[in-house]
Structure formats: structure tokens, C-alpha cells
Amino acid sequence: MTINLRKEQQESLQRLPLQYGIAARFFFAAMDLAAGKKDTLGKAKLLEILACIPYREWELRQYVRLTHNYHNRRKVNWARDIMEWGRSAQDNEFYHLLLIQEKMREDGMKDPWFLATPVVVLITGFYILLSKVLAWVNIKAAFRFNAEFEDHAEHIYAAMVKENPQWESEPADNPIAREYAPELRTWADIFRRIGLDERDHRNHSFHYGETPHHIVEYEGMPEAG
Ligand SMILES: [Fe+2]
Ligand SMILES: [Fe+2]
Image (cartoon, rainbow, N blue to C red; front, side, top):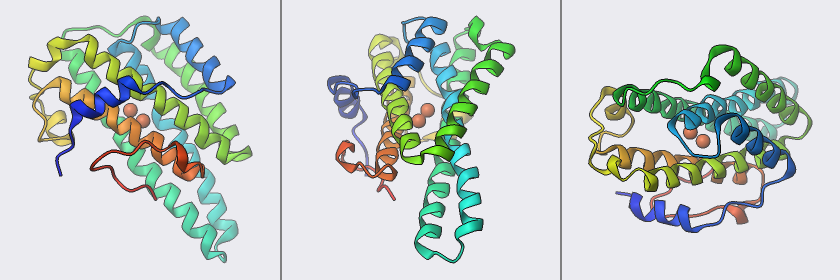
């Protein structure tokens, strides 16, 4: 079925962001301090570099759980579900990164200072540590934190499409976009789709965090779990 991406972008714009916890608020404030308050492609690139990390850390954690709980079918299924979802989510996040890279290349944009390798190593190092601790100490808190991260990303993409009306007429005619979503023709739709992917990640995080009342449904959404 065809998803109405414009309608879903409006839904994202109209829905207030979640009530973020202290850790997420601190993290978003630190990002604003480094990358500026304005939502830019450079800032979105940093978000996407970070976005893959929790899924990888959950996967590592689940491998250990599998080793220790192979005799418990319920735990095995749960761990495998998380791993399967995590793999597809991190591949999807990497597509987002490739698409932003392609858009910035087409527009002749240079990476801002905070995407210099030493800065990225520092920020990702911190995020790996945070994700690791959360994954091992309290996986439910890890899902909640990730849901907040993804909710934040969803709102950023919806706003960026609104703030860049020129994207509506810019064709997304490149191999990465064709691989990602061959049915989409413009950069505006590509970024709308990315925003909706973030909503899917947000919804799945709530599903595994066992707080399904936060899930925001839409027509054509993939099933969680
Ligand atoms: Fe993403
Ligand atoms: Fe995401």
C-alpha cells in the first residue's frame, strides 16, 4: 500500500515531542551546543552516525543472553526478536546516513567542524559507552532512551522538510535513493520517508520497552514484533 508521506509529516509536526527524561534532555542540549539549534543536514548526519550504535550494543547483549538462556524458549525468542529488529534498524539508519551524504554532495556542502574525525570519535565514544551501560544495566531504560532519540529525530526531519520547500522540486535521482525507495522522486519525499522510519524506530522501541500506549499508528505501518 502507498503511504501518504505528506499526511504523516503533518502528523509529526502537529504532535508534541515526548516528555524527554533528564538523560535525553541533557544529550539533546549538548548536541545543540555543539551543532547549533538550527536543524541542518550536518546535524542530521551526526544523529545518523549515532543512531546505529544502540542497536549494535543491544545485539551484543542479546548474544550473551542467548548463550546463558538457550534452554529458555521464551527468552531465546525475545532475544532473537530484538536482534532481528536491531539489524534491520541499523541498516536502515545507515541508509539515512548515505542519503544525507549524497544530498550534501549534490548541494556542494562541506561537513561542519563537529563532523571532523576526532570530534566524531569523541562523541561516538561517549554514546557507545552510554548505550553499553544502558543495554547491560537496564535494557528497558535503553529502549525508552532510544524511543526519545528517535522521536527527536522524527521531529527534526519533519521540520527540515518544511523549512526547505526547494526540496519539493529537487529530484532524488541517484543510486542510493533508488535502492532506498525507488518509488520516491523528490528529496522532500526521501526526507519525509526518513522521518517516518524514525517513527517506526520510536514505535518499535516502545514495543520492546513494553509501553505500547506510546505507539503512534498510521496507515501502512509495519507491525512491531
Ligand atoms: Fe535515521
Ligand atoms: Fe532511527
